Structure formats: C-alpha cells, structure tokens
Length: 196
Figure 1 (spheres, rainbow, N blue to C red):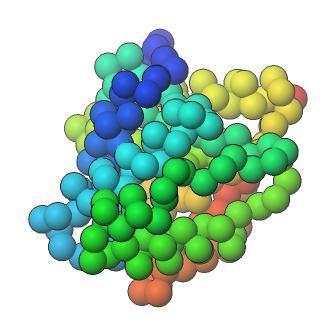
Figure 2 (figure 1 turned 90 degrees about the vertical axis):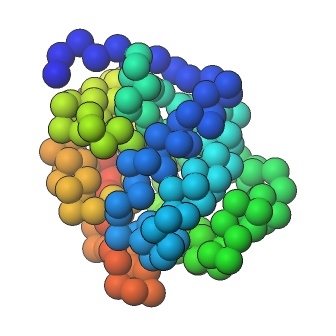
Figure 3 (figure 1 turned 30 degrees about the horizontal axis):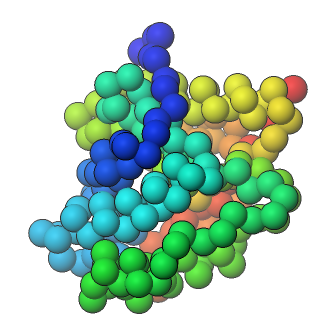
C-alpha cells in the first residue's frame, strides 16, 4: 500500500485507540494468558489499554492512519522517566478485575527487561484484523522511524508473536533472547539503531 496518511492523535481518541489495540491483540497467546475468559478478553484489554494510551497522550506520541485502521503508541524513554499513570494500581484493578495480578506480573516482566539507554519505546502497533497485511503497520513504523533516524534515536519494543517479530526484523530491529510468561509464552525484546 502506498501513500498512507499518518496523523498524530489527541486525547479525544484515547478510547478509540485502546479499542483498536484490544481488537488486534485479542487473538495473541499473551492475551489468552492475561484474560483466559475469551468472552471478556477484549473488554478487559480495552480497559487496560485505555490507561496506557491515555498516559501516552500526555507523555508519549500516538499516531493513526487517516481512517484509524492502524495505530501506534510510542513512549520516549529519554532522561528522567515519565511519572506512572495517575492512580495506576486502582485503575488497573478496576479494569482487569480477577486478572489484575496477571497484568501486574506482565508489568514487572517488562520493567525487568527494559533497556536503559535513551530510546523511543513502541508500546503498541495495532491494525484492525480485516486490514492486516495491507502495509498499514509498515507505514506507521516508517513514519516514526524517519523521526528517530533524523534525531539519531534508537527504538525498542517487545514483540509478542513470531509474525510481529519477523515484521520488526524487516524494519531493522535486532531480536534478543525472549523472556517468558509463566505459561512459557515468549516476548522478544528488539532494538533498532537509527539509520544515519
């Protein structure tokens, strides 16, 4: 797909972005572990992602395709860290209910494996299921990679499936040894040096 228009999104679209990520992620092995009840999974994920996307609206960068079929959520990790989301523990418990401890475990895993050098962290890249494979994710990546390259800033992410790992590898991310959820589900930490 050529000529995909990318726009920076504002706080009014927080719920839309969170819903798009939940819709795209509901079939992943990691989300099946986070929320074993498939009937409740997407709603619980959307509630959790709304906290994080809302935080990114204030402390990060949120982009979408013009039709919002694809979205990307980046957090600059430069200098002093951003404060945590306001009332995070209470909001997480309200969103995730009986599965809160699993989301807390995932947070701890991410924190333990997060690199320290300055970088931008791609927290979410999501495309509506019926639009996947059409180049929207690639367009979103290229959009922010252009900024990263111009500013000589590395990128980092955790790939949650073999398909996404391979996509990111095609965009210059180097894969490291995976870390795993208690059920063995892997996350692949990936790092991209800027192209200068």
